[in-house]
Amino acid sequence: MGSTPTPPTRWEKHHTPDSWQAYADRFAQMHEGGDDLHGEARFVDALCRRDAAVLDAGCGTGRVTEGLADRGLTAVGVDKDPGLLAMARDRRPDLTWVEADLAGIDPGDFSDAPFEVIVLAGNVMVFLADGTERQVLANLTGLLEPGGRLVTGFATASSGFSRGNAYGVQDLDRDCAEAGLEVQARYATWQMAPWREDSDWAVTVIGVPA
Image 1 (cartoon, helix red, strand yellow):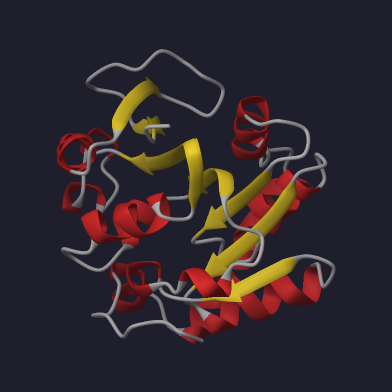
Image 2: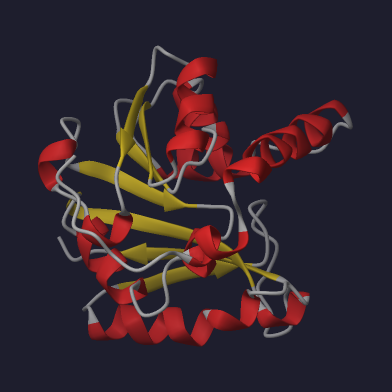
């Protein structure tokens, strides 16, 4: 692909190919246990037109991408991790999957762009390579249509998540402000629970100027 090499992500530092299946199996077990695994897709679906193109950035095995597609959206998944993408392609060969580094993406890799919404769920911002977060936001903004939106969701320092302190809400707000992006809303869950400073999770809707 047309990606530019970047430093290893925090995900790559903490996960090896041997752990990919365990990662996928964990979500399968959660599904069997009745956990809600489609909150992200429902949230994004509510923001979109019926014919919207949506990008799941850092899609992993494609759980959120599938949920978006099943709601009638034109959903595309992109991830740097070839092993996780292989699982996604195996599960849903009818969908579009792109192997690319979010910190060095080539817009030409995305035939469905521009997107109305780009979602970074599942701690994607937390797992990026150190220091690339602002570049990732800029790269993804370039794939959005005028007036489009980015949606991020990640664990906060309050959650005790082991890598949650690496990139937090204040860092996101700073990077958005410097990139000319507007934080439009923030919630504590994908079910839109009110945000508080001590919330364990932060779901943020970021607007791109029209």
